[in-house]
Image (tube, rainbow, N blue to C red; front, top):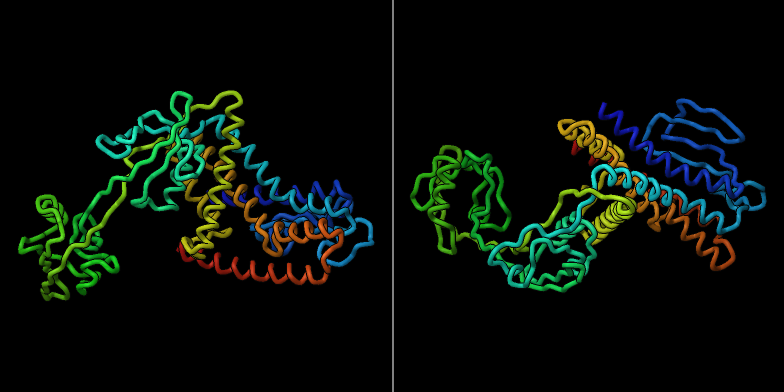
Length: 428
């Protein structure tokens, strides 16, 4: 069932994208030779008014094929290139724009039923720098480090992608209808670590080691079992927690005894200081009811959030914060929808519907942004050539443009294969 729902959602988002191209092509007198959902051989198809409507074997894409779209045909009536340049721009841009429209309509429905997440400060830690700077519960965050905040999850995403440092925090908050600037240096939580992860809460077996940390530098390996610290026997996880609680680690060296293959080893290491900056406040991530025009307002804000999150993720991909392995293709998307469906069932039918609709908003906004990227073969790449043509009042060489788009398509196909392979590895 979850696979069927996932495919239906994925297909609906793609179909709406292609519908944008289709409707604007018809409006501009361009002949649409085929309007299809899916890729590969046709399962079923029918022809009407010169357009073949098809459903194909693999529901992982779609197309709106227009007469003369990738050829140099300018003179023949009904071809893509015979339409005025601004008409062609509208046809190409319509796909992503329809995605944003779909995302907005669905987001409005979600907000009407569930509400929105105001970026309200719920609690300020007593004695913290945030409290000393004047931050109070009930303040509404409107800006964080120069980043505009509309929703509580805006702050969550930004702090997830931009690790908090010991540099000053700059906030703009709204209190009693007035905006106020607040700045402070984060509190620092200082801990000393050995640098290992246990197999489970009750075990002292080393599951993994943190590279560059004391135990790894000392030659301890995964599978070793820590048996004592400074001569005190550590039988299990509870004994370890009690020892650390009674004897907090510091920069004073400690003796570690561990077992490997039935043999006992001892090493002396100095715990490594680990500094964790703290914001000093908790903020809202729960929903409140929206009424009247606020439903439309926060529907638009939800779409803005999805678009900004996609753009920020692309920025991380370009700068190296994320890698190709973090990308998901059709297989990964279907799996994510399926998992969301399974996890939502225990919360009732309403939450299943809302979470599925939220996936539609996410996918539709994401598809709109990705298609606007100025990369050959994507809508954004085609728009670049059309805008150049509009400025020059003369088209770029059609054959050259076609070759560039073909090369871009081949690169995209290679990327899709790599991403699909990674998706399969993640699932299995």
